[in-house]
Image (cartoon, rainbow, N blue to C red):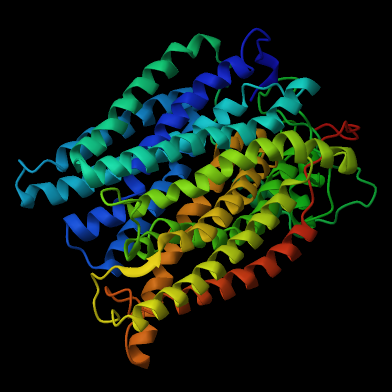
Length: 546
């Protein structure tokens, strides 16, 4: 955001609250669909379990990867406010069509394509909304003010808490309505909620700090790569002289300069002034880039290994919406003679865990650690992500142990060949894996949000938000790919692991495969985190101004 245009009377928590509200409604709607989608596909549309799981993962993947399109337009052309407004309208249109598609009055040959079309329209709306709305909310806090900088650090915790509130209510209320009233009523409730939230968002627009798009940030990245390649044979001076420190992109005077770093020295060629550059009066941006521009590209390159390492965590997240729910559907869920817990409602447990743990983390853990580490957020976002990755491994290991126990109980009672049988084992055994997953989300996901916001170039912060949620999308696609690979390989060995009859499926072994993959990923992450260099802003002496 261009700090030179900040109006002190706008922004802050009074503006962020409006934006948090629209995000809560969007999460409420999203989880009202995603939370029970696997059950709709398998029960209402008679799609096989493995295929349904891949469909859910594909939809989640498209929804998350579409974020990069929304982030690009927000950072480059439309700005975050307009992109959020437009994409939320598309999301609302998708919800309306989705609700219509579940009515029995529509012929089946029309209902099915309409359902999937509406589903992917919501994915596109989500793609424009999600990377912009969080960044737009964070933009309401002035980084140049110590008090608001501290508030921004706290904001990410409370932002995620708001998301969890919306998702938790959806999993409790909407899933119950879908299972016990009707799918049409279940989908219409979040549709109305998003419409009301969009009106609230528009109502608060007079209080918002608005940023102006600065053109495609990818052009600046490409310029560095091209300039460094063209001057790959240029010898750089050791004392830092002969470098271009001018950054004439039309930014505000208060735009912060990045200190020079020693990583990726091959890119430094782009900012080195050679004999040909010195003879040209006006700088050619495709041949000579500023120190600041080169350092911005280095920021992006540094984040790539960290981003890739979060895919494993995202793969575990994908299991929560698919196989975890199918596990629950085979277990005893009754709370009395007439009350039964919907399988998808177990997804409320991570939300409740987060609702309890975030205030404790923010009000007790962070201040205590702040006194020790002197870091405003208590621990660094890299440490936070690492803890979350470790907890995701623990989640899937617990799930594997419980699943092994569940199959053992089914075998003991002669239910192994009955796919519709309810195994005499309480669904409460699944609670630990959902609780640990909630803790994993609180550490990993919030840490990713903070890291990819803070460490991205300021003009690409919507793209930073897209990286966070895009990782979830990549993880969903990777989960589908792993399912396909496991099915193919296990079939060669004898029988497919993931069959419709969960009692004969080798779901526990599938979980152990994921646990081993994630453990290897954690080792790589630790190495990448040690290699990571943090963004550093500093006043620079303009040795040579080009």
